[in-house]
Image (tube, rainbow, N blue to C red; front, side, top):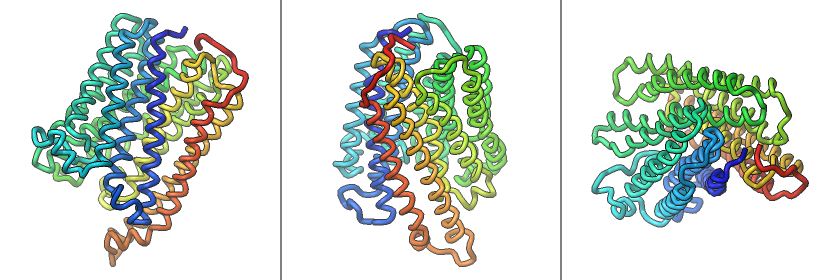
Length: 460
């Protein structure tokens, strides 16, 4: 059954994809600046392009999570959303605030932006991924609280399921840990210690609950497998994710001035972090193999399977490659870190949002699935983006290994800039792989506009 209030998810999904395109464009600008140092300088310096690239990633994923929750919760609770009007109002507030922040990054010197937005009242700016002005951070908190109020009230008046409860815990955790972005101690060790409480405990903690819940929801819909079976898998996955992810925060504490025991705790528990992602891969393939029906939306099934595999490779395998303290001693802050970050974010969070959009958008447009021609295009986009990301990561990994050898291990180590010259070939190859990724994303967009015969439906 489809609920009328699920329609509020549509603008969130559209905004998410639009911002995703912007993120990739700025990624390509940065990639070119690695090898053509004065490209777009001084209009868009590298530090600004990087800030826009990473901030757009965070914002569009948040739009994706919120849209997914607004779509999923009415079906899971079997009741209409508490306040569709509040959901739409918060959408516009978040979109305008996000757009103004990006314009501020591009149009003003960062120090001027800080002064104009009250950073002298409460110093929160200037830290990686948390560069948002104070006003934007406050806006994010207001939007998050309004969103959580809406979702929680809907849940309280309707049916309670494991999927909706896990999703809600993940979303509340996202909001709570973001509050540490307001804490900016002068002691650099304490600053980095608590900074990871936002960055790590988001992506390797509460976001994994959101990922698990969204994937479980789509798999129930496209496979017809009993809810009880999928929910048991979900509990196993989130337990593994929380135990390994929370204590695994220690792999960021190796070299920042914290006690030495973190090298043991961080190494042991972060070495176990691939387990929940491996379980997620087995879970996805197992459910699809046990499906009771062939769902017409084959593209959504492909995205769901791809999420498991790529999350395991990016967050699991590439994370493990450099997570042990004796290895990380040489590799931290190198291009190996960038390789892990790119594949982990794409595999775990980008792909699960695209999975939900792929499943939900046709239904929001009154059909069970997109026309076959559109699905073929969408599956092409899946392979173009995924294979391009694999090559981006392989080229960054090769650059990272060479960087570590030339700059940190060699008997005659080179300077940072001399090393960058030696690995520039890999940066060029990474850039061309990025162009292919952008083409794949544009194909994904085009697939939603392809017309053809498709089965009309009131729900799915």
